[in-house]
Amino acid sequence: MRELPRRDLDHVLDHTRHIWPEFRDGRVFITGGTGFVGSWMLETLLYAERTLRLGVRVTVLARDRDTFATRFPHLAGAPGLCLHVGDVRVVDPPTHAFTHFVHCASAATPRMSAERPEEVVDLIENGSRRMVEAAEAAKEPHFLQMSSGSVYGPQPTSLANIPESFTGEADPADPSQRFGAVKLAAERRGALAVKNGVRFVSARAFGLVGPRLPLDGPFAIGNFLGDALAGRPAEILGDGTPVRSWMHVADLVAWCWTILARGTPGAAYNVGSEEPLAIAEAAAQVAALAEPPVPVVRRRDPEKGAIASRYVPDVTRAREELGLEVWIPFDAAIRRTWEWLRQ
Image 1 (tube, helix red, strand yellow):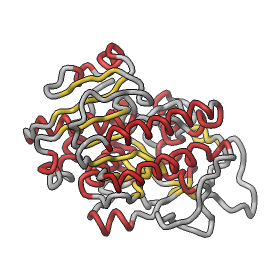
Image 2: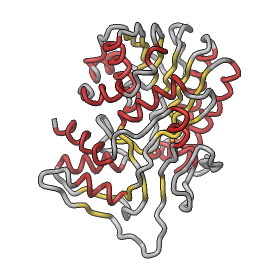
Image 3: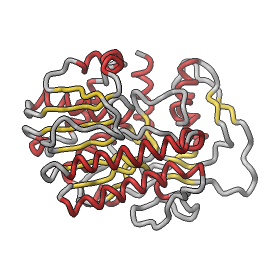
């Protein structure tokens, strides 16, 4: 896995400089450090340490030492980094002196939750429970739970942007919503730890784009990028009408570090872009990046009179409480990702 672009590392650092003094001489435990978001959190932290000389020591949980070293050779020998091998569901962290926990080890997708639901439940529920227990044994640590906008269940078509105050919840009996339901349960378990001194916060991520996004998985924008990179038509699996939004992961990571440092204990924060786009529009913009541009194809045509589904957050809480903004608009986000893929 290649290093993240220097431009993206600097972007995160530029928008988080005000919070890094709070990490000075800290001890950070990161789970899921080999995943898409987790590896970004790890690499940006190490970059901040290297640039600002914070005295931070980082322990990252991985299932296999050799796999980590093979995937991230540029990180494996980083000063201040310790690799702890284990399973997040049963691991005993090497020390209770951690000042910050970043829990990203729940890399189950909606597809996985439909195909192997019991494994998803076990990974998210027991992994989160174990990490929160470890945090409760520490001394008033900060704890970031990487969650998902899917906790809300289907967004009402009458609601343009979904806020944290929305009372809808993902239905655990519906295979397509099980992922969100289990994430919500993990959030609630963590919030209970606040009374035990854990500064627990949740980051509910919506659509993402950026380096390391899988190009052959359940993420539409990643599939479009993979199609364009291969010179084949960008294929829309449905009719292209659902409305989504995408945030560059560099913005997401800057938000997450800020939420971890400054978020209100027990609170959940939507993390995403409020810029809505139909999937067909997003596919067209990605297809235009290729030289020559590739065509866009749909598996089926839109139905007349049908109301498009939406999955777009309201990020007022993050903006007003923490001063966070989306700094990389969608067109720039896909161009930056495309440039990285083409290198």
